[in-house]
Length: 450
Image 1 (cartoon, rainbow, N blue to C red):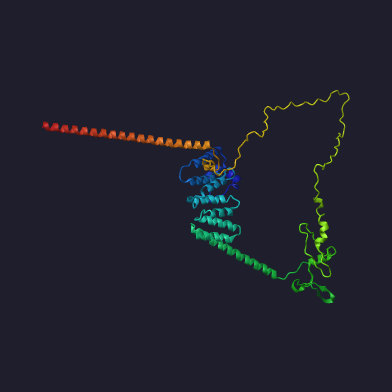
Image 2 (image 1 turned 90 degrees about the vertical axis):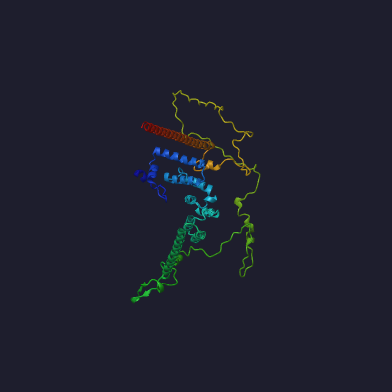
């Protein structure tokens, strides 16, 4: 067990309720007998989903899901848990007797962990009146909203659960208090960070390589000041920007405005008025050039039959070297063997226009209805055909008949035992009466002799 656990422990999905060590050991050992027993048990669950005749089908789904979580610790496609969760929720979430069922809510929360957009799922089921009286629904919804930094909406969701008297109320109020505490703590931390940033901004700073005010020392010598911030910095210098700008001044372009291209769909531009000049329209300057802007992408329409592509002559390929052949050799090149013609005896004939279609593709008619229960075919994680469902029903019926026959035999045996007991009691009573009569007769004879 230790070796299998060390190899697969990173892939085992953790459960909030914990795992059974015995079940986990059987699931990780990959023993053939254990795997066969697991598959047989899964088939029993699948058949029970389709042949259940009780009033609480959700209990079968709930036990099946719990069993899959324990016996398939690695998850994946083999477990097929997401499909089973989805089918269970689709079947029961609209029923009034299951809207506020804790078992269905736990199945819903397991399904939420496996979807990409949990907030949309929470909103959809809330609009359909699902789990209105269960506090876990609001707490988990608020948790996902808080993860998206929407704390205000998360608090509103918790207050909505309190207003609807969701049960239990204690965890709901505690979740709201903890959320408000976290929000207040985040606000305080954010304000202290802003104060620290403002305090650092108030400190005197100096641009890199900025000029400093020189200090004249004795004997005409100039020294740099000890203080390099504040009044010691010259206000005219721009530091590194100014020094690099001065060196690159010859390469910098002038501030001349570039010419704006005029679109052919909207050629008119507002007229520019300059002092001492006449008003001119920019569109007038571009009228002659707009038609030539996209010249390389526009060609006049012509006849396609007249356009011909010139074919280049293909040069004949010659070998780069000649193959040496002996003069004395009389062997000639073998003739090329032709392949026998392919037989068309088993070839599939092409389908003609009059041939019947392989399948009938019809649109769904709202007036037509299938007279079979779709849930029995597609319930659970596997699909069953009609014959399998009939076989399961026949086996279940036969099992009931055998139980009835066994009960009838037991009742017959009980009746026979009762009759035998009555016969024994009757025989004992007769024997007692005979013994009493014989004793009376003996006493009478003795009295007469006396």
